[in-house]
Image 1 (cartoon, rainbow, N blue to C red):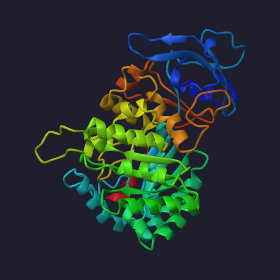
Image 2 (image 1 turned 90 degrees about the vertical axis):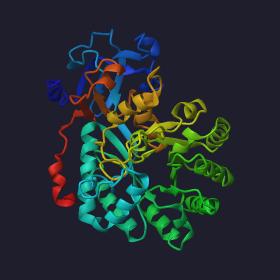
Image 3 (image 1 turned 30 degrees about the horizontal axis):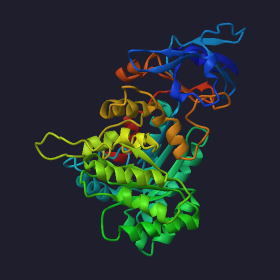
Image 4 (image 1 turned 180 degrees about the vertical axis):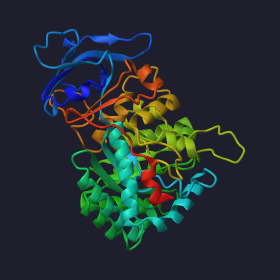
Amino acid sequence: MAGFIELSDSPHYWLTNGRIPLCLLGDDINLEAIPSLQAWPHQEELVAVNVEVRGSTISNIISAAQTDLGDTPSFDLGQGLIWPCFVDMHTHLDKGHIWPRCPNPDGTFMGALETVRQDHSHWQADELYHRMEFGLKCSYAHGTQAIRTHLDSFGSLGKINFTVFDQLRRQWANRLTLQAVCLVSLDYFLTPEAESLTELVAEFDGVLGGVAYMNEDLAAQLDQVFTLAKCYDLDLDFHTDESLNPEDITLRYVAEAALRHDFQGAITCGHCCSLSVQSPAVVEQTLELVKAANIGIVSLPMCNLYLQDRQPAYTPRYRGVTLLHELHQHGVPVALASDNCRDPFYAYGDHDGLDVFKQSVRIGHLDRPFDHWPRSLTSRPSQLMGLENLGRLAPGAPANLICFKARTLNELVARMQCDRIVLRQGKSIDTTLPDYSELDPWVS
């Protein structure tokens, strides 16, 4: 695909002979003019297309059978897939890449919590800036266009984290759309610091959030969070039920609080691992409440796979991935995201949305059929983040695209796709990843 780099400098060109998963096409596409490409027996629904790019936007999507494109420059994708750029709506950029300095001692959730708590002493503005920017460089090169990050926000650390985040948000404004969520345990909202934290989040146009734990004050904690969110007109994003304890039902508490407060803002809940070990009756009751409360769910399969059911000299039986299929069947929007990257909560990862999709397909059996699941890294998280114009392919949408040599979703998941082309505003970008040595002064 090397010849495409020069072509993308043209203000007007065609991408020809490409394939797009049907679920990624905008609702205003005339599908009668683009016959479906039935890839049976692979259970993939793709359409064969030519995509016209004018300036920074998609100007037209037509059937690949239409070969008379005049004298406009074109590039033949050889039946390769075209996706919109990724939207990664649950990350922890402030924790990213501290693994060389503080690996998880035993691979457990509690080990991660304590190790990160001890590492907070290193989190100064310059150090945070370089680690967080490294994560942004990786995300951008892989083809991500929007990121939501949770930021540890206890005490003075919140101001430092949000200030560094805002600096990066301004510097990367033409390349990445960034959102930030405060991260504290919800008992923090019953302390005198709750109001100042909420004001900090509002000052930086952030999202109010935290980690919900089962305790006798949980309902009161949530009432305070919802009250503050309504007062400051903030959306909400919670970590819920990140365990394999079937008695953990914090997701249900969040849904009940949302209904109790008649909350009209956006609510997202992440992890929801304990759903996977609860009885069908308990699950059904929770999912009905989640649907009624209009809550979106973001699943983090790689991190949960790493932490859950980890015991010394023991092969894990339960993997902690939430009920992806059941949530979707109840009409609950489900996104997939990368979560932690090279820190005590997840030792691996590279901020790559495709890696998230590939691993999730295998972990959650999202391939028989693939159906709507490509939306879980594109249009669905963009909607949950309030970014309605991202993550879809339609005339008038930004030409933020990823072109793969893979011709089918099976080929996409089977191989690394290191030779992908990433277009931002119609222009091909440099997809060279930053070298880990850039981090040596900060994490060695």
